[in-house]
Length: 316
Image (cartoon, rainbow, N blue to C red; front, side, top):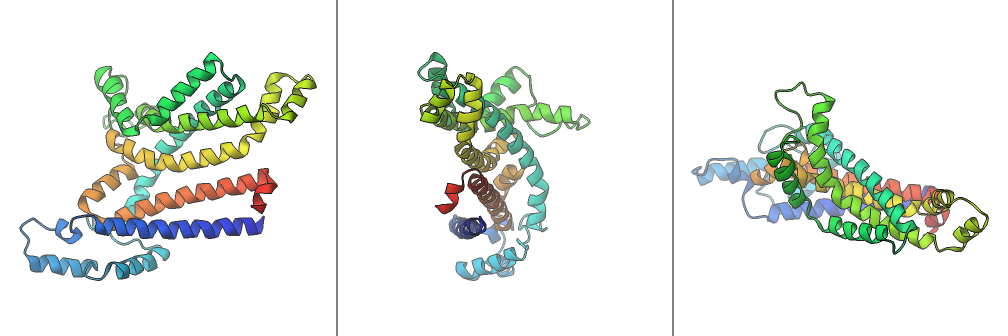
């Protein structure tokens, strides 16, 4: 088990290294000048070049990356070009808000996806199965930003059932009830795609397992159907379920970024959107690397849990 975990850790570090190179390259190849963005449009060229030297932008891109990586390994992600404070400090303040939205969306997605997937998988070719399949295809195909806009227009602007933007009402006391009201629409918009994906994967796993010999044997022994499903079928579907939930948890961080912009949720997504417009490279790098770190860590945890549940996986 120790060697298995070490292999996964090495793979995780390699992925993070590759992601950091990719994002750093994309950000620096994007049209625009970070130094010019910090100054008025009529600033003289001499002042722009001075800012470029102070920001280290006059050096070749590989050298800039080496400097950034060296500092990042030590926990220093640089200072925000836009706010002149620690980039990590800015992201650290926004990260809990994103976790709240992504966490609530994951809970909703897992409950809906698991329930629908099990019901559809145990009733193949029924009306329930066909309905779940159609809804799953529609849900997995819906762009989260489009669904967020539709929910905002219908349930907030038209019906007035839920708040339109923000995390708390500025006129309220900022309690849990106020937070829950603001969470409803962003959570639905963010959880729709993961719920559909989880439901489809669980249905496929349950459908395959229900046709295996040990399930037929359990039924032949006279066990109740719900015991066969929960104790035998669902238990053997757990490795697949854990993997897909881990993947969707990582997706939710990215998916919630888009939802945050639509609903003005004060998380990393809104900050990333603002930072891209200002070409605030330290903040952009901090957010993207943090998302990659969470995503790969969740997959590492899922791999380890799979190794615990099914020892054969450790030998792969």
